[in-house]
Length: 606
Image (tube, one colour):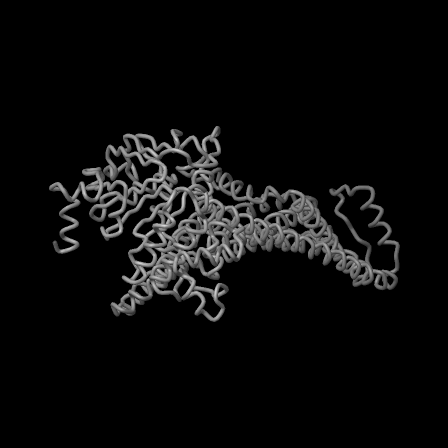
């Protein structure tokens, strides 16, 4: 129970910014509860005074407050016909006020819940942007999507309907209990022992709730699996179709969906069990109480109206107990979702600004990798080993080697996509970990082998690195990247939506838009990671010419398997198994028996 309360209060912390709204809702809930009690109290004058024309008889053991005693005396003095005329008007006014307070309590609680959902989604998305790339290497895309959609939806129910019922139904129990308990004690002391049965409701409910929590966690995990499979197969639709794997993927989906269905039904079965179990216990207690209290009515010790009020109060407590049991079930579903949300919110990015990090506004001298050792996680081997490399301003440094040699990893350390375990990367003699990440990355443009384009216009994609760019600058960048001609052939030209991940473009067209994006940013440091890998021979020649113009005056790192693209580099770094094995100019490396020479001869059939 202590653990449950701790987890539940952690969930409620999400609603902390809305304390004012919550207080207003609490007041409305309190008013509604009081009106329910007053409505129930109308049974006494209706039965005793109007229907039976008898005085209201309160058991002698009950000492009413002076105000209530005066009300009872007044009701006993009013003629039944007069009371019959007044009571309906009073009831209409009462139910009107009750309806208004009920509306506002529901509206305010739903506003709190939806505001929390909006805030949590904003926080999760902001956290996704803040986390380092190593986090994404450990998580599936669909799983993360599930956190911001399915899991957030689960806590919405707990913060709207469940929280409203928790407060409202608890107040109902208090109000009806304040009526039923004194009356029950006045009728017979034996009823107190029977009243103790009601709290026993929470013993089976608590045990069922633990099972609900377990199965809800499995349901959410399977939903994450479904989202992951959907993401993979939709993004990989081309591969699925060309390999005729539609039936295979349908089978995979059905298997996971069946597991999701199975765990959902196990959870549903236990949620459904809560209501009849609660109701049975409450009804057993009510019937025992009825048999005891009924004797007192038969003996004339209590008026029928008072007895009716007592039984109505008692029976009115059954529904709140049932709803509180359902609240417990809903919360047990929400707590695993809350835990999964907090797993993300509590995650600390590996790459972040130091407290005393400084801005860097320009690049003036050199970039140095000094004694660099790097691995992606603690259990893996080092993928970069004892890297020492210096690139002067304006130099073109080419990185070549077999796939998996560590070339892309090496350049990813420069914009601090990762931090090395040993060694230091310097920019103008400053440790990049002492610089603000955003200011460091503002000095770097990247064109990677894996084109990342967004489902937006051509203009928006080119201007992604410089949102304040003018139309003339965007067009100029497109021309320098030799993208202007094919863009001009689009019906809406630069306003054409290119589709998800640039789906409507060819590989070469995607590449040239990405190159235009880098040209427009015009950063002093340029990283070209297989930037011409998807271009046909004609386009490659055009873009290579544009690259040579773009590179002038910039410090460039070029990663290429096509060795024809690196021949003009100032220095060529040859990497093998995470280490630098050779370095020199194109001619120097060809003049010796080197790995570079073997790669060159293999590629050009020399």
